[in-house]
Image (cartoon, rainbow, N blue to C red; front, side, top):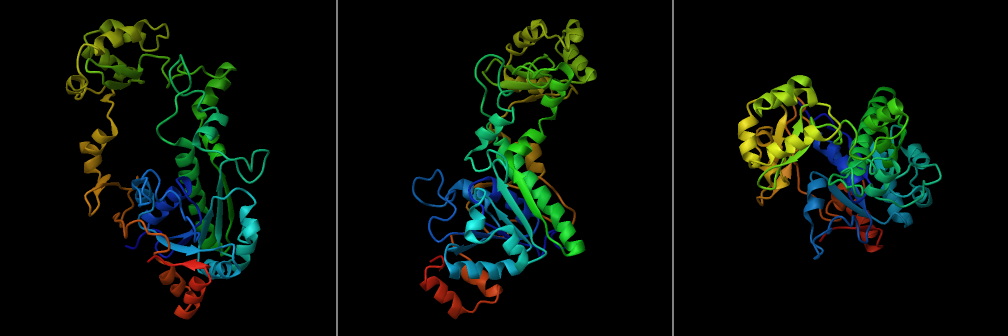
Length: 389
């Protein structure tokens, strides 16, 4: 069987994390993703964290399987070359601030006139309209506006910044990918494209269903660390062990909580599953502090009580379950690579190519679009295009 998105061409104008992660999903599903970079710095995530200008680990991780074309979209010749690519494309993804694509002449209305089946996705922090539409921001800012940051962390002290970029990845990557795929179905069936407006702040707010339910039930937001899944009750939380590590207890269902209490030799705690006074939690804290993390895992691992180790990331990469599922793979240079979080029958994941150098595929992609070498050479000579050395 062919890959699910075989034959789909995506022009990715985005940079950094959210947009490239979205198009990584599409590339892993078989789409031909072409990064359209400028002829200057290009995607500045390429050297992020390296200090040397070399291609960094983050860039390699989220841009595998893609090709790169370098065009100066501010020049008439570069724009004309991009228009040629659009005529052969199914999807355009951009993550500029609202208004920028119109100033470049590559907005949805302009490109849809060239390719009526085009799915055009604008990915931004706050969306294309509203009082904050043009405001700069990052993951932490979107979490702050959506009420998620205020609810994250321990009861006492400041909010904790999550190590996973929730707004960027849930909002910028997953939500955009879902909308793009839905629009592609319609484009295939009816021959008409769509415009997709995805705001990372919106997507964060839309998934805060537990916070909304708490507000609706009590008439006030739950305090940080005081909700069902944030630490209010002893049956759901993190406990320190004797070696300074942690175990995660997720015994929400009574049968799991009861099994845990019996395994710990504390049947008297069964009635304290939803004890908010702190007494039952203190009892568990004292118990778990007596042994090392791995001793608890060995003791409770065969019991259905939803107690698991809190692994660091290096330990997670070595975890037997993730390895059995093929989630951790190795590149040719021996470094780790994470597989996509989905399996589709008839399609075995395999990165078709490593992350590209800036402009590595300019000539090949422009040739595919019908431009001959003489015209491509003229674009390069004029500074409207760039080919990797």
